[in-house]
Image 1 (spheres, chains in turn red, green):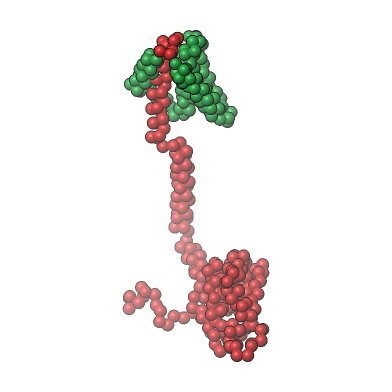
Image 2 (cartoon, rainbow over the protein chains, first blue to last red):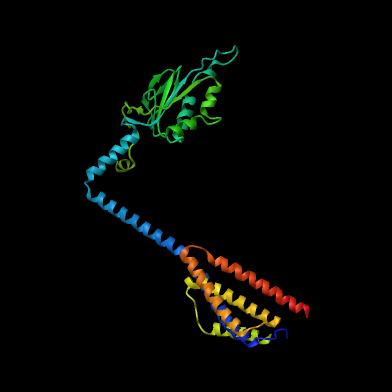
Length: 230
Length: 109
């Protein structure tokens, strides 16, 4: 027996130690079993946030219901008009000017390669739309859902109006995004410039885009509900 | 050697049998106090082996160490200093030191 002294005292203290061990063990088990305090706080914060949001939305619904229906109708009409291109718009954006190649055609080469075609313009338009352009016009012709862009001999037909180069494409949107979307490496502008087609991009303070000037008529298409009645 | 182990077992049985529980907020203090008592027990064992054991020193050391450690952690929490880790480190080091000395005595025999 190596311990010569104080066996009783150590044993007594060991009893206390044992009790503490058991209590601590149980407490640790409790902590593991219960939901962490941080989590509770997070959840309650989220709950109060969502409740506030719900209240705000409820009051909005009430306000909308109680307000005159013509007011909301007018607001919706304005929205639809803007979307349809019937309202002139202005805002930040870019103006892209595109002109035919000045490079002399080498003998035996197809001169068509150095001219602007409808698909070049379409590519630019597509890229601008992908970059979030909200309104686009070509030489002052607003592009709407039914606008066409096609070659008509040496000219370009947009909204059934013919234009010859240079073409000026205006777009409203985040100017930086629009410009960089066109100037992507291997993108539209680089491809066009390869053929000597001149592309310049300007970023004026405000870009003005006119309304669609033509008439919108539907000869064949009818809303689904009316067609059912007939 | 049998008596301390028997005491420990008795203590554990008492602790398990009686549903004593510390609130979760105080679990930290309890753990430091536990470590301090563990240190005291090892210190006592070492003193017993070295034949330098003093009953009053041992008993008072046991309680003051545990209470002081818990109190220090409490003050540290109030002041924003993590004294918890300091106590943990100090007691841990001492436990291992005492253990090493006890082991040497056993090996010497």
